[in-house]
View 1 (cartoon, helix red, strand yellow):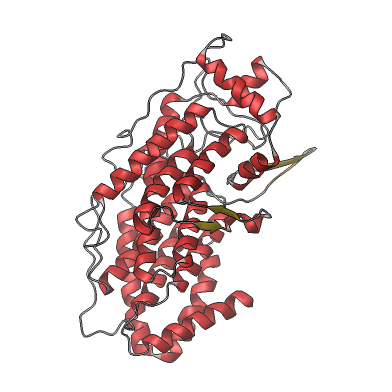
View 2: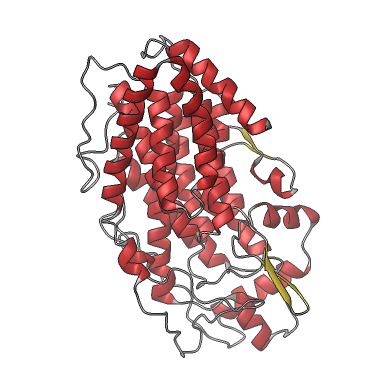
Length: 437
């Protein structure tokens, strides 16, 4: 009841300010959009989508909301003509009264709802908004819904051409038998996640391999090799972690595949994806500075693009190098009883996904909201972890990267080279996609 009452109050505010169908002189509040993002994240966590798949859902939902707002504010640019294959979405006739904010949230929900399994989790929320508004102004309601549906339909049609469906029909991944290649890890020994994600159509990248990183250190178990030096670093760092380092690793864990094992009983703990964490940061940062609807939508859409392209680029490298995880090496050559602080995710080691997508997201958020942007991150409070404060998006991204070393699931070179990879993706995105005229 508490959630429904809050949404009721937000819609009442919108109707009071936009009863005539036109936006107020000062930019309307983006609170409904923030609420929509949180509800979509809740559905993604509930359905246990992989990190790459979650980024796809955020992308298309945020593109639908953003394109709606472009129709309202001509200072912002449509993605048509900037993103390959993106449709030219027509608006309604100029004499039609529309509440664009309401239509944007509807487009967001309708798009996201078609991409998750538990669409009912989103339907409950949007129905509260729509039913209340219908009672206030039927004409504006009907126009807004019709426009929101049209935008959602166009974005969803565009989404069907990104090769996602074809990757669902691929054969099961076959593991390499070469030494130094990745194999499933304890406790669940889960099969490879999204081995064909590099075939997904990117937004700004020319190809998945456009920002291919330098290769990892050659697998060599000689004690003097660069590879074994990195192995020893993971082993020794994780054996003397400070409380702060444990907290950092836990704060950025973001593992939707976490498996609890108690005897013969196995059950999953549903957690936020790394992309979901950065969508949350984008929202919290925009909200903390009272950014208007348009600025907030731009921050969300650029962040979701950075995450989407970041995962495509990172997964391209992961399944090219197929590099072994620290847990496998340490158990075989140093300590068979050693376990990392965090559970090792079910995909190859190099490069670090957290490092790539965090660096890319930090680049675009810095461009949109400013450098040295101090903020408090409340994302993990729902999971029993305290708020963390950062002086900038870059500082947060660097902490996200190093958390993987503290967690015992990545070598340092995967983190450092992943950050370079992500930074280049973010900079490239900004050079290709312009949200403001």
